[in-house]
Image (cartoon, rainbow, N blue to C red; front, top):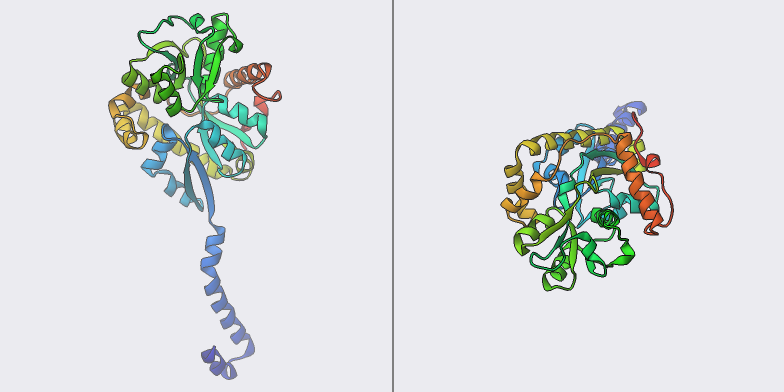
Length: 324
């Protein structure tokens, strides 16, 4: 401060105060700007629209204009992603039909903010090509692998129901996709309920036969979910993310081969196989309507009746209200 001390006798006290205030403000400005910066924390999986959004980099400038930056966290599947959302570790992510139901049964922290159209052919129950199982009814007494709490959990329940069976009529092995494939290939399980792109990879790599896919059984929606607090307080940022997803959706719908080439390195599946999965996918993000909410409620009620979730839940209570 020697320069200010030298000037002080020649300045009126109010001018000294203004100079000191200006210096202090200049020092604090970087800290203040950093403190005002807000963050949108997005959870994504290796496959899907969110990983494309991350790769294309179109969300960052859109959010920067609103005073936000973005952080990205990768998850192996929907259930752990939504556990992180419930725990406050991410603000937004996507998952299939079943993970949000398990998550809502554990906490009221999430909201449904949008969904993609039904894609029933994007998940299936697979059996070995030359094996003895020819119908879902043949699964009685057999062991079926699946990822607990994933979309295919409900697919299996519905397929068994249609065949006149219950979950108790089979043995279920709860395995993550990589472990389930290994068990399937060595014959430790008789069937495997799995979703794309692992489904497409298994078809190509093992010669697996489709016993049943989701057609006429389940819709297989993809949902976008956000933390309830984030939805309530950061509406403009949320809307910006959803708009950016819509743009990527529109591009992906018309550029299947380009999407496959872009995703192949991160997913670890060759582009031609990914293209098979992408052709079974659907695009067109939109708000949840009454039919979609009713479909989710049916899954929730089924799982509660089977004792898979500890309490009854209301899907409508977790849906983002228009204008919020």
